[in-house]
Image 1 (cartoon, one colour):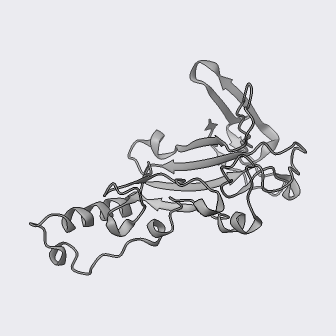
Image 2 (tube, one colour):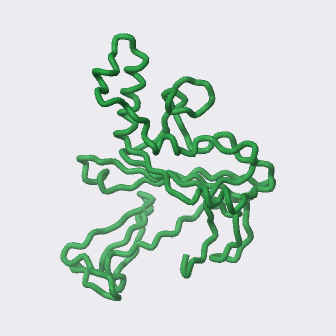
Image 3 (cartoon, helix red, strand yellow):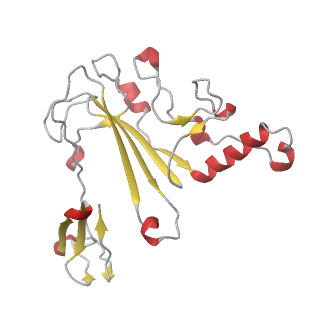
Length: 228
């Protein structure tokens, strides 16, 4: 928010109904996890070869194989002793033992050619953006995109939200709103619109040339549009 104001903070909440979190845990989760599809494919090839008696690891992986740090750091399992949920970020349990261990073939379960993952909550601190009270909501946000030959897909970013009520109160008539500041270069001649049939909100430049203004460099001729 403006001037550092915010209502959401890093980290998972406890599951005991208090929906609490310590500053230390919040600091621990103050990061964005990134997973590449190429790493997943390589990992699958490694585990497939390792479990196939007809496959030679030395031949298929002459330089050896190293599990990506992004897999090892994946926040798949919470700290149950600290009151967190057992399972947090989604993963494929390759050996079906209920644990997350990439060395046993497990790996992050993610869509897209690149995926970004964040866990945040609305309870760690005061709501300086809205002034409202904390609810006890934990949000798992997955942002992903594809490297595609299809121009539309290549220019699309997908965002998936998993919203979990960790409090002991029932939320009545819950609503989910999304804030987006859709600036098309210079903001002085932007227009907003909606296409109800396509559930689409869009932003366009007011004319065919987007000039520079307010210290922001414009797109120039044929500026893009943005849809959500």
